Image 1 (tube, helix red, strand yellow):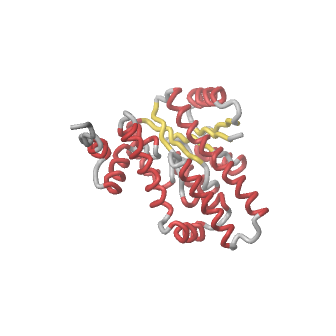
Image 2 (image 1 turned 90 degrees about the vertical axis):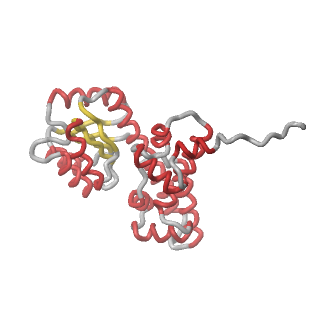
Image 3 (image 1 turned 90 degrees about the horizontal axis):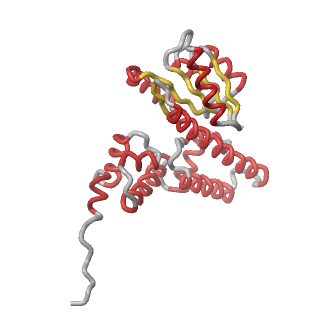
Length: 262
């Protein structure tokens, strides 16, 4: 069961959001807070895994509340609810590792889709954590080379199957139960590259396949491989391949060699 916390100072809007999420996610528990300070208090006591924070709230803004909640719950998934006019301001929250934004006026589908992604990621993390809990109980000393190799193989498999999610080195390290610094060293030792480079490589390879085997647009492909911003996806793809996605797709349309009888 995933715990979802909504922080919204407008009572009518708060009730609307709560009703939608309770109906869409019957297996989750949904609670709400009327301001940023109350959200921080609830986060500390109740420990929600998914949070929706309005940017503008009394006592503490959504940004201020998110910063405090991150210190308490570093693995929580946070999305901001924001008016379009506030969007550039909300982008300051990138450093807080925010999962997404929901623009006002909030539409049912946008709300449900955003929360669905966050809930799926939480459930994946729980599965992953469950595996490593067993691994630690049955695998002996975590310093043993064989166990380290098993852990790294499991991590890589998880990344290859969940590259579209908001993965981070810190979250993976916390799930495994080792420090981020130790995890980073182990990862580079076994794969010869750092975590973000490996993740980027996996995502771009998947993007290449989608570009050459589907008619999906660049934006849709970027989102499918873990890059919600089409601009950022184009930049990363060009850096890795030397050309933008559209050109990569076109270059595969070159005439094929004629093998017919002459």
